[in-house]
Image (spheres, rainbow, N blue to C red):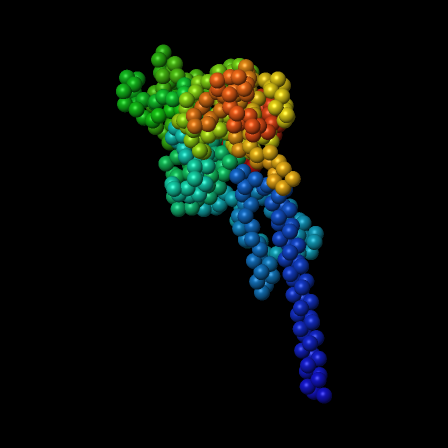
Length: 397
């Protein structure tokens, strides 16, 4: 009888353990599901939002670890978990990290900083940021910094590319009078004799204005270096802003100043551009910040055409190309160009060039016409993905 009793007790214990284990597994599945829902809501694009969480299952319960730059997403997750009665220990790191000691802003300190997909020089060139651009600094790994650009792109930069600043320093930089470099490419000099060079300069570069004379602007770099820029190659920033026309002819004129600039994967400066870096640069030089990649730009602005009726297009419209959706595959945007009229679009493909959609034209682009997807209009459109006149403003969310 004693053996039978022990056997029955052992079976009951196993049933209880299996039941508890089943409830535990179901609770973990629900927790993982809620995390995924929050990620899809707040951080659907990992290029512009960081939300990397993991659930650790220990003897004392669930622990959430990882990092994010979206505190609102974590607050929302905590609220949902509380409502569902799921208890967790929160060890999530909210960026920017405390290790930065308040230096959570920075200004690009060279003509065009190469921003990498990982914290090493051998990593893919993800994008670029030009001199004077204000960025958010999220964390440091080794000598590299994870930053977020005004178009919200996340990438890594080496210390030579930025000047770290605290809240007061960045406020001083933003409020200071500046000049914007408007030539395609040039140099800053260490004297008005224009002999010794301080740095190269690309279109769109911003520098603090110290003083000016008939021929030169005296300027200051983010790190305090002082130099001279020819007045014929730059404008006072506020004057430039007030003179922006926001019209199609201006976009076309700007686009043609970059003819022949080489294709560079990840490039967004006049040293080299990829296809979306080129359209981004055209709009940037006309006072607009648009999304970085073609697959992001396609979601901005107003739909114009998706059936290759090019008669609907206006100068400045963006044409998108790629793989059309099928029953088994989704659409994939891989290329973008800008309409310049006369059945032509300008784009970066091997170099910045002009192609035609007219079969009888000598520059007819059969390849891209064959993979045409749609056209969007960004100029003067109200869209949260488009920023007007905020080139130097830091990201705060």
